[in-house]
Image (cartoon, rainbow, N blue to C red):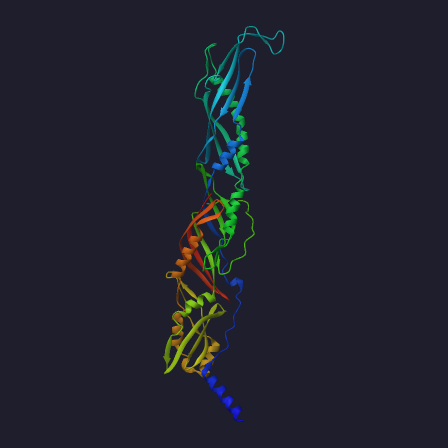
Length: 461
C-alpha cells in the first residue's frame, strides 16, 4: 500500500513539473493550395563556330571545272578552271563566299565552214589554234556567291544561293586572230557555276544543328548540384530560335527556352523529354523567371535555434530555459513550432503562426505567432504563469529570419553552376543579377518558397 502510494505521489509530482501537450496534427497540404508555377522564359544567346561546317562544304564541292563549246565556223573553246579554297564570310543575315581561281583556254578558229559533206561541217580553211594559260601562268578569276540561310523546325539548315559575280582578273587576248576570249570564258564559266548554286544549297541543307542543340538541351536538363543548397533544375519545356546573324566565321542566334526552374534539397529525377521541334520565336532579353525553392524544415531548425537555444527568462519568479526550437510541421497554412524547455518546469510547448515575407527587406517572420490550442489549454490547467506574451514574443523574435545572406549565397552558387563546359565543346556563361522572394507556402515536411531570379545566360560552341 505504501509502495503504491509512493509511486502515485512520484507520478503526480513528475506530472506537475512536466508539460507535454498533444502535438498539433500535421496536415498534408493540397497541391492546389500552392500557386501553379508560371511558365518562365529564358533567352539564351548561342554562338556557333561555323568553320567545321565551312571546311566540310569546301571538301565536298569540286575543285576543277571543265567545259567546251565547239562549233565549225568561228571560235571554238575548251576551258579548265581550278578553284582555291572557298573563303567564307558571314555578314548580317547572309553568308558570302569568294572563290579565287585560275583558268586556261584552248581555242581554235575557222574562217569558213561548209556542210556539204556532213552535218557537222568542214572548215574550208586551215584552223588557227591558240592557247591561253597553257605552258604559261594560268589566268586569274574571282567568283563570288551569297547565300541566305534559315533553319527549319527540325533544326536543318535551308538556303538560297545566288552567283553574285564572275570576274576575270587577267584577260585572255588572242592576237593571232585578234580575239578577246575574256568575255567568252566568263560566260561559259558563269553557266557552269550557276549550276553549282544547287550543289551548294544541297550541301548546306545536309547540315543540321540538331545534334549540337540536343547536347545543349540535355545539359540544361541535368540537375545542377548547388553544394549545400540542394539541386537547381532548369526543366526546359520548349525552344525557339531567332533569325541567324552572321559575323565572320560565326553565326549567332537567340534561343528562347520555356522552363519551370526549381531548387530542391534532393536530386530530382532526370527529365527524359527529347528535344522538341522549334516553336514560334519571340524576342526576350536575359531571363526573369520564377524559381521554386523547396526548403526542408530540418535545414531551418539550425537557423531558428541560433538566438533561442539556451536563452533564459524569469516569469513570476520562475525560471524558464529554452533548450531547442524546431519546426514540427504545418496545419491550415500555418507553421507549427515545437519548443523544448526546462527550468522550474520542463516539457514541450507548441506555437503556430503564418509565415510572411517582407518583399522590401526579404525578411521571413511569423507575425501572428501564438500558443497552439492544446498547449494553451494545458498551460491554463497546470502552469498558468507560463501563459505569458513574453514567451510568444521571444519565440517570435527567434523565428525572424533575414533571407538576404542565404539569397546572396544561393545567387553565387547558381551563378557558379551556370559557368563552364556543360557538354563536350559547349560552354555556358551566366550571371544572376538578383533573386527575390515572391511567395511562401508551408507544407507538411517542407517550406515551399517561390523566388524570382533575374540574370543572363549565354552558350558558345
